[in-house]
Image (cartoon, rainbow, N blue to C red; front, side):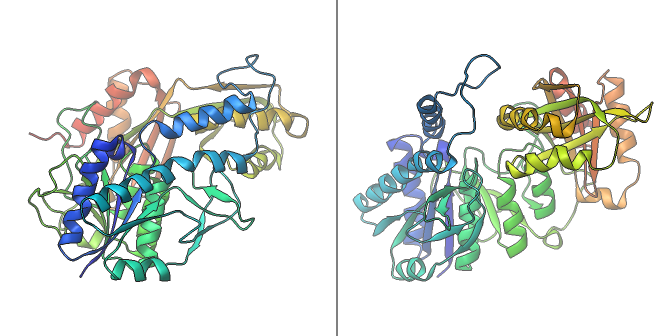
Length: 430
């Protein structure tokens, strides 16, 4: 008997017909003698609807100054109470469908397992999972249908894990259960060298390393959520990305995923590595610029400290050289969903920071080349910058790691940049 965790995203459970299809995948694994836990997201579109209701109830309207006098900083605990209900509905519906197919199943909410989190509501982090009762039920032949995206905070309130948190729930559960594998079912059949909607010659990878997948996810690839990959790498959980739209009896190697998806695993489990394995891009980033910031020690801490306290993640940071030694401009990026809150936090701290003007913009894109082969190959950055320059694409900011090079560019050139780099690094398929 193998112990498996199967995760299904919002598009996979979009309606009752799709839930029946999901149940067929689960039944296949159950009938094969595997002990199964299933983690589900809310039905497609439900989370956005619930968030809109929260904002309507609070009186907040995002989108620009002057549209509302009400702060965006509503009670995150009540937000979590509302938004987490989407996964509760899905887990109950899937359990009912499985029961109608003759499969013993029950739903589990985050607090019932329980999944323990910290108290950072809306973006809580998992601190521990108590799986004894859950595992006992699974080994007894019952399919455990678990609501993803949620847990229980120290204040005994429901806490959500942030957008994409169901992936994190699934991998964390697999780690706690010491599962043989975590299968992430989504609307694509694996991890591609880039978005096939942008580059028609993109192809699916049979395997990808945790490090590469982590960079792909953090730089814009939507297949897996960043925190879930971090957790999988930390706990050595093999993750198989496959499509819920495939037929339940699709042939392939069920142990490794070859032929049916992409296996995310350790680098030493991959026979050959390209210099660059994939090109990622993100349009959901926003640029924040503070003009005429005092150029003196401690100012950066006064800028980024309040953002950290508000649980707003900052990505790329660029500070211009101060010509007069007195003031400088500071630019950084955040998730576009966090832009309004970031601007509000910085406005509140204006007197402490001391800046002339504050600007926010969303007309940017981040494009990244990713591959573990960069460790042993020189000149990758030079090739990348030259190719973009030849296409007339201006680079606003650069960020690098050992296996990644990211550039910030005008959003209008995002797809051109992706296609250019995909061809440059020999990733075009037949």
